[in-house]
Image 1 (cartoon, one colour):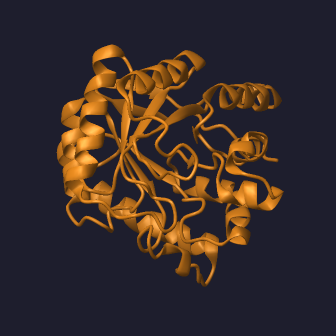
Image 2 (cartoon, one colour; image 1 turned 30 degrees about the vertical axis):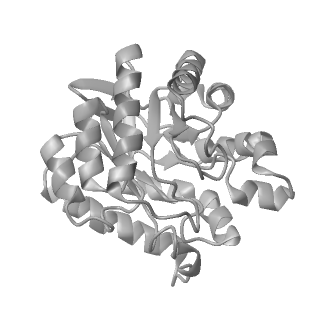
Length: 286
């Protein structure tokens, strides 16, 4: 493990307020979809949404990531109108009840991103790195919000077949460097990278990615790790995703030790505990 695992002097500008990332943060997942791999269809009624958001905030979530399009491998494609109908009312509902909550919108569509920011979200989380909507980067620049840049190939319908790399770590690093140059040219400065565990990567590649996560620190921006209950855990352990919390915590600990600044999770309290314990190993970096 590295001694310099936590970022120092790393901040995000969120609506004019600076958030310090020198201690890792937690992003709670809210899927408003019927077919997500773990919690599909679980949060559709207003009461269940607000109850879940309240629990995540009470448990210590720094962000709530709202998604209305399932990006699991082989997921059904839906039109933007349906995605908008799911996420915009949800964002308004949450902001009315919890006005201080920081929301991100998990979408690859610029129209959904823009209308979600207008409804009260503050961050755009794009699984496609701008490749599924050519106007996404321009939209982010115009909105002046933080942008989460994820690595993947293809679409949720095709990505499982696009796993050939010359050199996994170097190829992904090159991808990020080129994309960040484009973003900075447009004036976008608040950028987070997400290596995209489970997206156009085999089981072995996912573990290689985690093993070498600290390599991406050379890029100089915060790293988000989205490992929560993913198939690399439950397939390895030969269990169901509903039983994958312990495995999630184990891999989150490794992600933190290798430089992750944000954990994107279904289970906030356990992620908070994970951060507190790992941070005890590196008190000089707090």
